[in-house]
Length: 387
Ligand code: GAF
Image 1 (cartoon, rainbow, N blue to C red):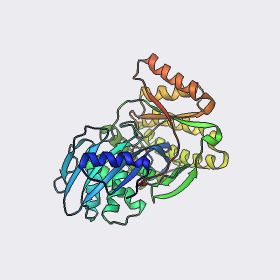
Image 2 (cartoon, protein in one colour):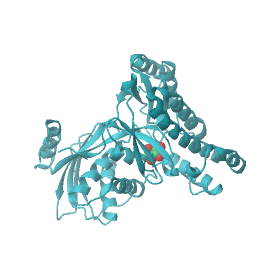
Image 3 (cartoon, protein in one colour):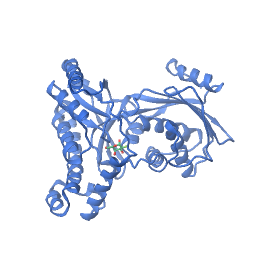
Image 4 (cartoon, rainbow, N blue to C red):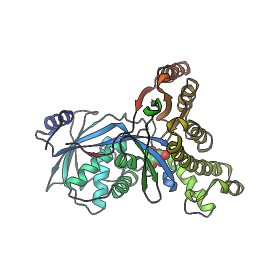
């Protein structure tokens, strides 16, 4: 194994945890979803990008064994030990659930996964709504697929990661996050049709337009395994069934009057969010292509309003982050990810970045909220082997 100096730190940490060198180092990034929220499990459109924060894993296969040993630089130095033959879906394994979940999903797919040792170091803030768990899962599945000798397409890796998340972790999520993490490319957003996994890479270069993508991590914890996410998904499925379509993707804005006449108010508003959000994704792709990033602010704003009022997945901290950023000069802002906490994004002229940061921090202080974390992100490369 050849290691660049930037990966040597992880190799050294692996060696001090396990007493020998790893077979390699792999990484997968977190993501920001530019637009297209809760459309993935409705077989619709999403437009995320992989970010320059990532999980790296140093891994060594232990052929002929079923033993898994895991250490995280973000946890205690203690080695967590498991047997692949004894792990159970929805077990309480802390962060180890994520690597174990994808190992389990590979085995369910008929791939013989060897025992392994893994050292994790991630810069994706945990619980920030930037897909910290998917970054771990995608880095691990990329490593384990290679070490198992399996040849899997990106689409298969996406579905196996989703299986680990749905059936082992117990979160009924779609394919947005792992698609961004596994299929992202530097300088591009990933325009994904979630019905057939067709991907088109859309150049997204905020910097070229004098903009930065500011992330406001509200530090409000959220979980996709609790009831809020699942109840939104159930409402969408009930709406599609009542309207006689396989998925909400099959409706357009012209169908909304009929939906309103047939559905109860809450189900109708859930449906309206998804249908209009799909339309906003398509419009964002067209606008980015024809006019550039500076022209998409209104679409980001409209997406946030729809999530706040129709899908009801925002929270006071996310709403304040969005309104304070907009008032201080961001050209568009919205919560990103599953909601109920996590992060907002604010597309901001570079010249106003400092004003926007100050305005958000002041607003949170005045409201008595926990101080948010603010940082910028750029579209980065997807999962791969580093060393
Ligand atoms: C979470 C889920 F993991 C995604 O699948 C997606 O549904 C998203 O919430 C909402 O767009 O990140």
